[in-house]
Image (cartoon, rainbow, N blue to C red; front, side, top):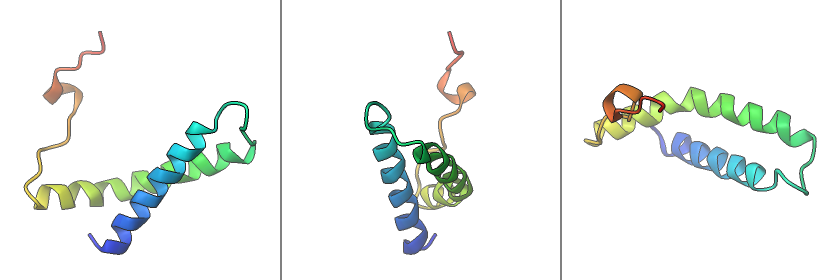
Length: 72
């Protein structure tokens, strides 16, 4: 993972959180399309982020099976 990829991921997460924070009274219609595009980019970057975390000795990502989340 490059620093550029990491910075891109963090900028996207930050922007998505900003959009979500402004999802009430200050909502703009164009935010919906931007948020969807950000989610797509984050989905593409996620495997790179996970690989970098594993390479540094991080734990495996939490899944329903590994964390015992049964949805109830």
